[in-house]
Amino acid sequence: MTYEELIERLDPTVYRNLKRAIELGKWPDGRALTREQRAISLEAVIYYEEKHNVPEEQRVGYLDRGEKAGTACDPSVQFRKDRQGNNDVDPDQFVEVKV
Image (cartoon, rainbow, N blue to C red; front, side):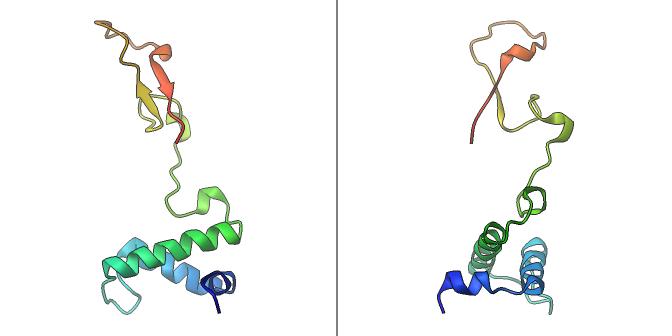
């Protein structure tokens, strides 16, 4: 069985347990995840979510920017450096950065 086949057949309960282990940094029995286990588990969870069309807002790593989207608090926005000496807030001083 290949890695892809394993992920495609992964039980939703196992997926949830992996996701929870990543969040807490430990297995359900209390043993700590090693750095390698966390990386492999995270890769499996991300792959599972992609293969099983988990909604974006339910995926690991999702950030709900809500009302902050497009503002200076949004990490996808950067301050334009070409503005000199003006401390007034101007919506045109921000540019969206595509990641």
